[in-house]
Length: 403
Image (tube, rainbow, N blue to C red; front, top):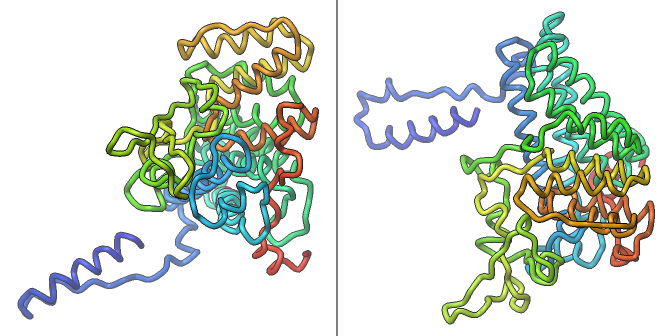
C-alpha cells in the first residue's frame, strides 16, 4: 500500500510535465485497502510476520523511551507533555494512550496472526519457521505488557491481574520452542528460551528461569529491529536525547557513578561549557548507547541470562554462585571482577548490574517495581509515593463496557 501511494504521487508529478500523448503510459490505479481475505493465503504469511515484528518494535521504542522516567535510567530535561508529568511520579490514564495502544497492538497483531496462520497452514504449521517466529513475537509482546501495566485487559474484556500476560507469554514461548525445533531454527529456539526465562523469573519460577537461561551463550542477543527508512521504523532515541535534550544522564546514577555499559557525553557550547537541555536549565549529558534511530534495541541478551541465573542463585542463598555468574558476564564485557561476602552486598551489586546491562532497554521500570514490591529495599525508597505501573488508558476505559 505504501509503495502504491508513493508511485501514484510520482506518476502524477511527471504527468503534469509530460506531453499528453504520454499520459496513457503513466496511469496508476490505487487498489485501495487490502481486503482481509487477501491475507488468507500462504503467500501472505511472510508479510504477516513482518508486520508483527514492526508492531513489536514500535512498542519497544515507546516503552524504552517513556520508561526511563518511570524508572531511574535517565532524568527529565525537556518540555514534552507526558514526560513532564511522568517525572513527577504520576502515570495517569489520560497520558498513557500511545504506549497502551502500541503494546496492545503488538500483542493483538501477533496473536490474531497466529490464529490466521494455523488456519492457512494447516498441518504445515507445526513445522513452520514463520509460525515459530510469530509465537516469539506474541511472547515478547505479552512480556512487555506484563512488565509495565497495572492490569491485563484483552480485547474489550474485564481487568485481570497483570501476571496473566506473563502466563500467556510463557505459553507462546513454549510453543515457539517446539516449532523452532521442528523447523530447525536455532536462532528462534534461543529467542524463545530467553523470553521464557524472563517470564518464568517474573512468575517466580526461578528454577525454570535458570534452566532456560543456562542454554543461552553469553554472546546471544535477540533484538527489536529499527531503521531510518520511515519515521515509524525509527527507534526514536536520536531525536529526544542527541539532537534535542528531552532526557539527560545528569543527576542519574550513571552520572554520579559511571559505567561503560551506560555511556554518555556532555553536550558542549561553543565556549566548551556543558550546554543546558531543552528545558533551559538542566545540564545536557547525552546518552551514547543509541546514537542513531536505526540502532536495534535488545529484547534479550546472553549477559541478562547470566544475571537471571545469578538472581536465582542469590534467592537460593548461594552468594558465591551468584557472584560467579555476575563476573562471568562482566568478563565477557572486559570488566573487572566484583566481590561480595554477604547476601546484602550481592543484592546491591545485582541491582546495579541489571541496571547497567539493560540500560535504556525498557527493563529497569519492571526491575525497580518488582524489587520494591517484594522487599522494599532502602535504596529504592525514591519509589515511595510514585506510580509503579501503567494504568488502563483513558481511551480503553471509555470504549470498554467493563469499565
